[in-house]
Length: 624
Image (cartoon, rainbow, N blue to C red; front, top):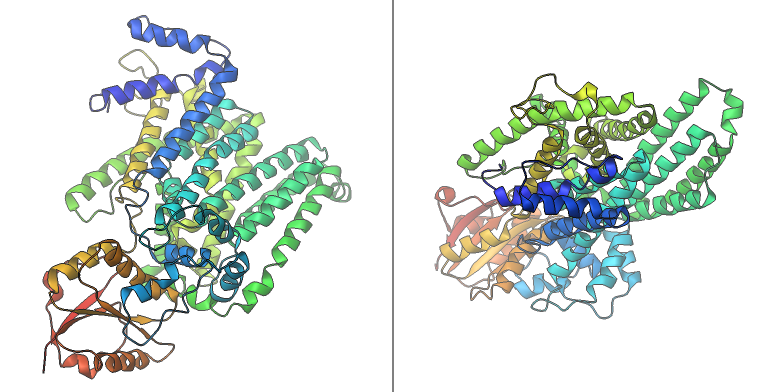
């Protein structure tokens, strides 16, 4: 790696070498073989005041993080969930889009046009009646997007994605605070922030016009309060009242951002029960139940419970909740029972490292897979030993147990929902935000051991340069940290280039295909059940509008509830009203083919490329 990127490696090594200046009380020894440039750097490092060092390092992580999150921010086309954010944040709905008839692209895109008469009340009402999410993020997006001009008369995708990108970057210093408070270590705080800055999972969520970046902020804040509460439980001192109120407020805001935030609260409850059990071993149950720290924790639990109860009527009255979550429900046969395990494992891996293994080019997939496999074979033992060493430290053991309890409880809840309730939460990688901060803090704590490894962690063999090595292949602790961080950085670049966490839908490629294949007028037909299917076609219409294409295809959303034949009839009635010739593209059309369609010539699409998110058939309808 140093041969390929000598300049970048040298710069990063010197920047991150600032960490030992405060991680130990002794100054790092200068390298006797270094040149004048190295000595100049050393002198600057040792003279820099710690009061400036910490803010500068945090600023560096923040700059790296925001740079990654803003790179190629609008290069990837929006997908259905993002269209839901755009529409509902404008105070609009999908109900105004006509069904069962041919419509122009501008008609399909009407919900994406800013509505000057819409209010925050409209945002809240439309979400409560047509969506399955609480309104806090959408209200913030409503106010935010008013600050930006439109793009061709449509709401700005840049504005919509910029908000979560900023929120995602804002979480980096929050991760520093969480790691710093949990382990009372500036080193752990900085390593946690550094890994969050380049986490491919964190970058992925921050580049989507959705509420997950904001939810991560609330999860981080709630876990910070849990850490403070744990300290007071250990010391048997009352939880400060301001912390109690802050905890309740964060939890209330978290629930108002995403209902799955309650899973984070469940994991915290498990941890608190574990802490209570530990204290039961040394004190009577009665005195424990009414001890000073627990009384205010009960108040936090009560306040959070009340904050959650507010949303139950909204959930119960929402008639669309079941249809919008059909994609995570379903039966399993045979090996399908193992899929959730691999999906959960894949998400955990991608929080740290993700190379282009999703690429369609096998020559890119194979080496990427080999590098990732080799990386984890090398890194996992190092990270596990770091956690083991931290567990052996009395001052850090409890915090490791707390964060491990959060992660294990969350994964257990995911599997309970998946295998016992029939709701496969592992299918949505984004749902893992509920424990993502705990993973990064554990990673930072383990890397802190690697940075200053105790004797128990050092291997007995000597490297070529005479420095004891950690793990395999002669890579010592600091180099191991740098290599793991560098893998995260490369993985983040993979995500921003759409080579990792690829978008489910590629309307841009589908529009290019239509323009290449169809020289005559085009009708695009799709079955419709919910606004998800409207969003699929919105993606196509948006690409056509922004490209100023001369070809203006018509769209028909053939609605169906239970009987698929209703879509068939709607399409047939539409076809009878259109003059020929035209090309009919059946896209994600899950209904019997109409008799009128059979009179058209079906094209052989096997020679045409497949397009993510758009399963299509092509018919050439000539004049009679």
